[in-house]
Length: 130
Length: 140
Image (spheres, rainbow over the protein chains, first blue to last red):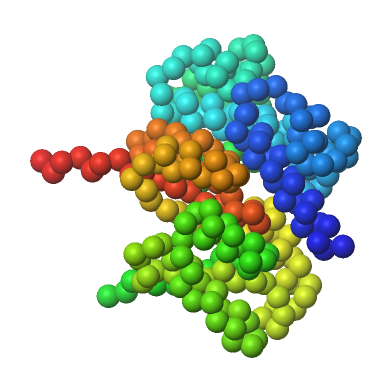
């Protein structure tokens, strides 16, 4: 029983790592389910049971976190950043960003300070929580 | 004055841990002693024997089986916080070398103000980071 849980966790972590590496690409549930060795429907359910949120929500927050990073630390335009992190429309990006952080991208950029922790810590600790 | 000589991370299998930390990352075994109640297994960076990492197996009697099970589940979720940071003089070269050995990367080498670094996982879920520090600006 426990061994099965460990293997399931490790495979789901591998799928989550894949999402973190390819966050700008569309959510590819079939590919992630293959990494996790489960069916698509089972993948979404198990991911949620393991990490406390659906893959879609995890990816959305990852994209917003990466957008926050680019807003803080680069001079790229909000439109470019929106595309960089995988959104197709500025409207969806701005709405999602505001829903998750409570601020507009422009407001966030004007008030945020650069942070120099290693990227894995930035990704783990600055991804907005629900 | 203090120095750090020994740190610990949990692994789920000590032989698999050796395959990874020695066989792939290139560390060396510093101590591998059967103490009867536990296998005291430490690794170190070659040429830096003063700083060891203990590869510890969670289990009885150090913790009850239910707790060990929880630890193993957290390790495999990447959630125990077991984490090691290495530095190298050439992060991209190290990345290519380890990638060729089948190491599982979480992040490709990326330029950051502090240097170039990449992220990977050990076979169990522990995170490892390898950084090539940017040269310090010359003192004014």
